[in-house]
Length: 526
Image (cartoon, rainbow, N blue to C red; front, side, top):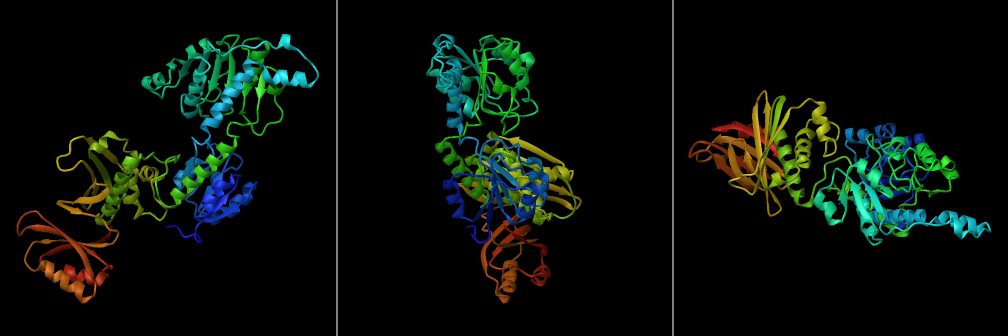
């Protein structure tokens, strides 16, 4: 449980009170709005988490000054205002709320489409100025028209569902969805070229990236129907605004509606001078319901991150599906144990996944192994966020293998670390949601880690060895809570693992090592 007096959360942009209430149950919450960049940089070192919206920039300089920061929460979808690379390198998780305003944005998209089709804004403006002009405000019906959706993600899919109620023909371009998914939405997948040529309405629902910036420019506008209308409630910069104005003025397309802009806030633009373009000030998420959902969802993500739990919407770590969480936790234990057993310089890391786990994306498992393995050797925080980056930075060679067959277990993870001093092997499995370490080097056994101290004794299996070790721990009043034993053959090499209530001193370990038939002694914590 997080101690309230230790954790501090900075809320740098406004969020709904419902979210603040959730945060205050776990930590001290300071709401400081409209902070200048230098002021944020000065105070960030006192906080474990920060919550921002689009107004606050979390730059690399700010992140460098963040001594305690564990998580950056973006109350919304876009993370353009956060230096994710800098956060990742420092092991700081970045989380957002990509689904909290899905319905709100989808409904706003439909509202803009209807307003375009029926010239709502122009009609409202004319009538309020004293002009009754029905004849020049002839609109168009949505029924039978083709809606082209670019990006069939959360919002795009909800727009598709709602457009069906208007009896529209639906086409979409999204190379990252399956044909079966699109078919379930009654949407035909087409190329971008086809979409531009066939659509009467085009709705954008993609993030702003190097690939999507300027997705629709003069060249693309020239391919559209003269009756086409564009709606952008996704991200500013997807459409070349200057080219769009020219295309509308010369009759290449019929109109457009924008809720987002290349620069925000925006109070002057060529877009504002054209009455066939409808503009709204980034209102996609501006409903009471969406604001409440966003605040509560980001609060939940922040608390989960501070508690060391997996976050569903972490931006800079692999997504961990619920069914893989125990396996990923076990992977961290495997890596931690290997790091305490190995000696020498790592030359190669080998990871093998066996059984049902191979049906999943194992990136999170790999990151968990590396975080456990590397944490012991680094002063900085190593976790799922930056483990792969640190491994690559240090030039570690990592190979992976997947084998769907697994004779003894339903799933098995094996880590082999090659060093100049030899090879260290640790294997683990998950059974009924419980972690089991089942192999240590040449020895197979079944250990359930308890978070306590362990003593590993590599020895010749002879009568009296166990008793002699027990005599030494008893003399020092150190209780043995459990014992695991594995041998290669009768009276041959064996590995004994004792779980202890207290840690052995170096002197006590040396006494055990001096006993007859003891080859090696290692103290670890699991």
